Image 1: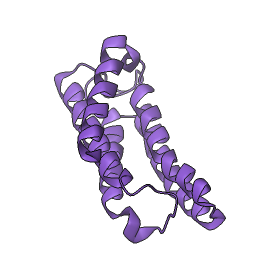
Image 2 (image 1 turned 60 degrees about the vertical axis):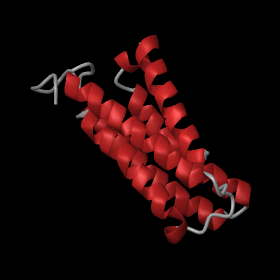
Image 3 (image 1 turned 45 degrees about the horizontal axis):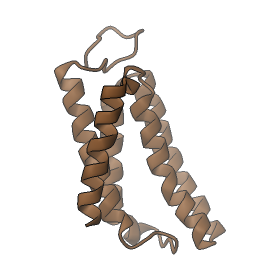
Image 4 (image 1 turned 120 degrees about the vertical axis):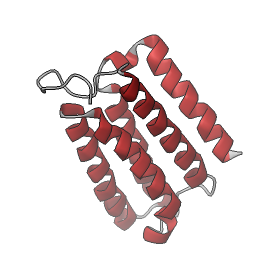
Length: 141
């Protein structure tokens, strides 16, 4: 059920962003990456471990930096960050012992992240979004 819920919510998020025009602003998908990455920090805080909050904050910062660089250069990096976070979800419990993470979260977040990465990649491939910022040589990456 968490996997299916992740798929449905990714579709709803992507389609809502598209239909509402939120994705006309290049910040939409990078912002989603930062928010998605912040949940593990929240779970660490809920679990009451300052050490795990620090570890999860470092990981979140890595994803946030990729999102910012992708925003400034190419949204393909943002798609890669979404897919990368999905892969991270699959191995998270082997890397970080975070007592606040719900048991269903990794499969939910994996499905959400990967489907949203696929959707963003599809939009970029179709030329429906500018892959690169206004100051770059190519409008479509």
